[in-house]
Image 1 (cartoon, rainbow, N blue to C red):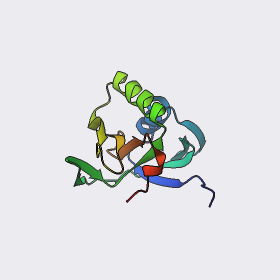
Image 2: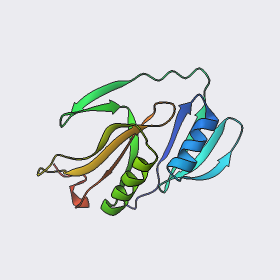
Image 3: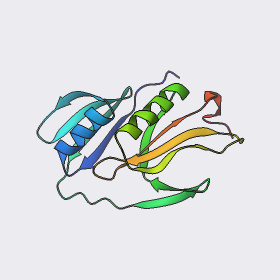
Length: 139
């Protein structure tokens, strides 16, 4: 099956602050928009932020390989080199990581580089990479 871009819509209270974050911090190209929502090219996928003034984020988490992983979260799988470039760029912006860039499942099936951080509305994002992409769905 040919892979197609996914579409994800998320709520935000402050559309302007989140628009700046996705456009200027993550370098996502802005697409269509209105006064209540903005489309972004999120690493080849469609992300839409919808202003919802009464949105209340609830943080829950799950323990994964010794890390307190925020749930829900979303993100993309990057190439190994692109992941490292993004991690270095984010460090220069002084972003506050929920889980700092690290290697998870070291020496095991599914070994991956991963990092977690929040957007301005506390929507959790994960970016990951595999040296061997065939490990993405390995059991």
